[in-house]
Amino acid sequence: MPLLPTISTIFILISAIYVALGWRFIIKGKKAAHKKAMTLAAVSALLFFVTYLSKTIFIGSTSFGGPESIKIYYTIFLLFHIVLATVSLVFGIITLRLAWKRNIPKHENIGPVTSIIWFGSAVTGVLVYLFLYVIFSGGETTSLIRAILGY
Image (cartoon, rainbow, N blue to C red; front, side, top):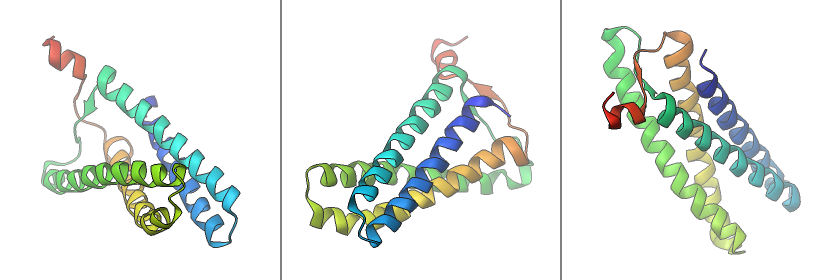
């Protein structure tokens, strides 16, 4: 299995675990533990983004290598994941900013929604990884740099 996709997937799983822990802590009224868990979730998500971006820029994106008969379903699923990931990124930044600015009432309103979207993004991201690298062998990989420079 390729190293960078595996590492980035591990980071997103760690992030989802910390979000779940943070949610549990705040329900139990443990604000300091909640803050620490959510900070670690954000750091893990940032590490995911850095490894994912590095892989995409320097190694490339891997196309679906499974059967042609299910490629359309994979593509639809991938698009769903991309939308979830983008929305969760925006919601995550807003939710974290509200917490850092101590706008707790708004943070409390948007936090649960952000967490649910984040979990959806994490789960679908892990499934994309499994489809590309575990269940099926990945298709062709072309780096962004090679695609831009044309070699």
